[in-house]
Amino acid sequence: MKESKQISESMGLGVILALSGGFMDAYSYVCRGQVFANAQTGNILLFGVNLSEGNYQMAIRYVVPVLAFTSGIALADIVRHRFQTKAKIHWRQVTILVEAIILFLISFMPQTLNLFANSLTSLVCGIQVESFRKINGNRIATTMCIGNLRTATQSLCDYWHMKEKAAAKKGTFFYGMIGIFVIGAVIGNACVSLWQEKAIIVSSILMFSGFLMMFMKGDIQ
Image (cartoon, rainbow, N blue to C red; front, side, top):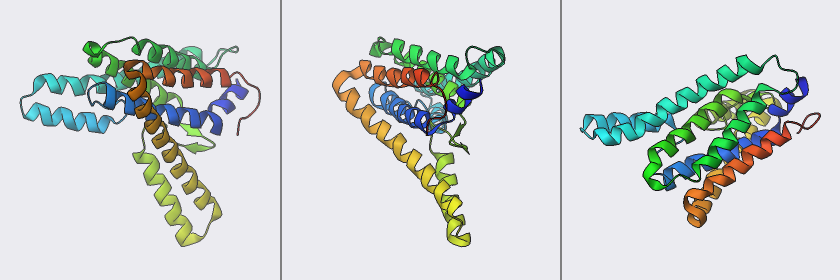
C-alpha cells in the first residue's frame, strides 16, 4: 500500500490531524471537566497534585485518561501488526476509521459519563500519536506541541547560525503545524459553545474525511 502510506504522511492529512488534535484537547478541557485529551503531562501532574492532597476521586479523574492514552498506543501497534500485510487496506486507514467512530460515539455521552468520555478521547489521541508520526517527510506529533515547539525553535536557530534554507523551511513548517493545532482548539471551543457534548462530531467528521482521503491516488501536498 505504498500510495496509502504516502497519503498518510501528506501535508493535507497532517492539517486534518492537527486540527482534530487541537479540537479534541479543547473539547475535553472545556466541555468534559478540565481534563486534557492529549497533554498527558498535565494530567499526570494533576494526578500527582490531587494524590498528595488526598483528593483521590480527582486523582482518578486524571490518571484514567493517561492509562487510556497508553492503551491507544498499544491498540494502534496491534492494528499495525494485524493489517500491515493486507493488500486492500492500509493499517492506518483502520486506525483513523476507529478514531472517527469512537469520537462519534462520545458525542452521545452525558456529563455524568465525563470520565468515560475523556478516557475514550485520550484513547483516540493515543491511537493517532502512534499511527501518524511523519508528515511531509518530518517526524511530528499532531496531538501535542512540546516536541514540535522544540524542533521548530532548534531549526530556526540552525538557520540563524548556518543560513541553511532547509532549516528555515523546517522551522516554519513546525511552527505552522502548531498554529493549525491552535486553530483546531479555537474551533473546538467555539463548537462547544454552540453544541456542548455534540461538538466532538466535528472532530469525527475530520477523521472520517482523513479516512476517505487515504483512498485517493498519489500524494497530497
